[in-house]
Length: 631
Image 1 (spheres, rainbow, N blue to C red):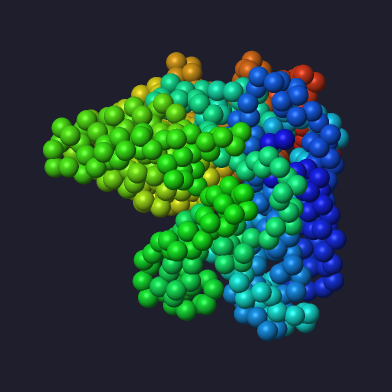
Image 2: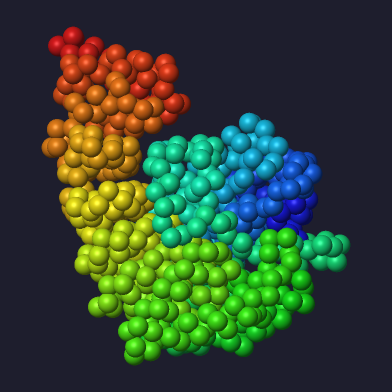
């Protein structure tokens, strides 16, 4: 069973413990009740996984990919965090706590919700014997979790000001903390699930409940190879030696994420947090320590090597996988075995040192070799990052030597395939330099800069940072003026960034609608699919809706309904529904333009989503005709 020391049986026990936590009253009563109910929906899923044949039984020659291992680990971590959070939130006493404490608990609900939704999104249905009924339950739970993320995204709700006067049982733990985060928009049905780039080649069909609207195959023509990521996942060969109820020491958990720290860092107040979380807290404009609320005298993050060593020793003692992919010269395989990479590491460190030499030729040679190594496999991506190459490569993005710049941005693209490296790249402040390459680099550098932004934006929190960096304007420019491959790279990055509601307005202001409409009407570009997919995401935004209507694109959309591919017909119907839903004049117009017949055909033979959209439009057309006749 993938997933390591936590077995399905013990996870069912954990779910039962969460469901049975008493929720009586208080500010977070509804939040606690809702979270417990959503967790409870997973019981049947875990039971069916428990009763499924193991991968070894069903296919002895197959090996588990990283995503198939990681989803279980993410689920375990999410459920453990949910239990800790419910224990704190149910005892929260508003009268004796600050408004900031309420906000921090609200963010922790968001963090746990995101972790659970991410885990369920990566569930490898093809590995287990999961019934249709349970799949529906899982998709229901995912939908509820995504909706909850929207609610938790706003931390200025009246709920918190009124909460301070409500009676509660007792105070919450003083260790609950948070960061301010922006609201994430729920992902439209048309959006393809955020699979890792390395998984693109194998994921020819979307997971249940998602539509594959944008082809990601373009990425496979780049330097990055399609080897599955080999993240280490805990696997204990003797579960009886390990207690299912092992408690992680509180000091080892990041107060913000509630997860075991892998890179603990100390802020100026002396408190320790997971580096990536406290950095994002600061990046969002927070000037005080989340725990003590003292003003931060500076924003220096000092590595806590002592705590990292203690965490490592504790993990070793309890046979738990240590955070991070590379430890003591070895990486851990998914099956629990180790590979010795100390020799490779020595060679890579030598190359990284050459990146900082004064010789242009030496730098050029070193970054070219690192680009080649980062293309080959996951081990190299881990080692290059561990050798400290990422900050140096980021500096080389602004090199006057075009060859060095091209190799540096492509190397960062390859490194970003490994999930943990995404955090390191963001923390190195790479986005600003990548945008600079996108604006002024060679065409190859621009293409790979756009692909890098797509890779980084697969992490939801990065969508916010990238969107605010000026990247969208540069991507729209590439979409309009780039090479054929550059246009596809830009389209895919823009599509992913526009999943976040706040980036839709930025894209419209950057002029995205004009090139998208041109892609729809110019058959030589062969990018109608990409254009329709992005427009279907944008059409829920009022500014985008107005811009699309000004572009007089409705006749073209009706043409797509009549003669295009199934996915394009689906997206065309979705866009038309968004444009005409509350506009009787537009409804009458599409009726006169001949939309009724293709909509009726789509309602019979389209995809499930297309049928829903078509039927909704037909119903609106029927009502508008009836109202017109009654006048």
